[in-house]
Image 1 (tube, rainbow, N blue to C red):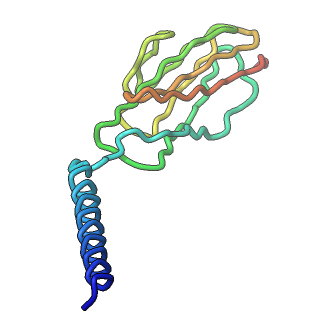
Image 2: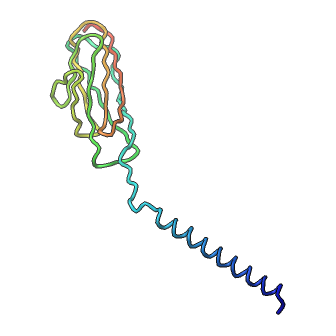
Image 3: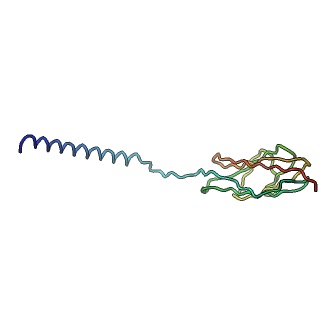
Length: 150
């Protein structure tokens, strides 16, 4: 065997050693860089679906507002709440027999809920209902009722 063949074999052995060490380093970095904890999604955006409501209301009349929270996923720790603000006219908003106070938060026990609006004036009435969750997501639903005579 001549010196050229010896140098060639020596070079190939060093190259194989370097490739092997490089592969082992990459494999070790890949194994140790993995996060061992599962990424569990707990924040699901939602929409609020509202059944159609009348456009007009008379003083003393009650309108039923049926709502449903729709989500892409479900997480046991999600809690929903609502608040409302009336900026035109006068009326009361009730949920589960309880009169809601403007801008106070009220917990929702189900994703389906019914609100009752009772008119207390003979003018146009408008209010917004805000539904939020404990993850910071929030949706606004606006309602406006024109005045009508009984």
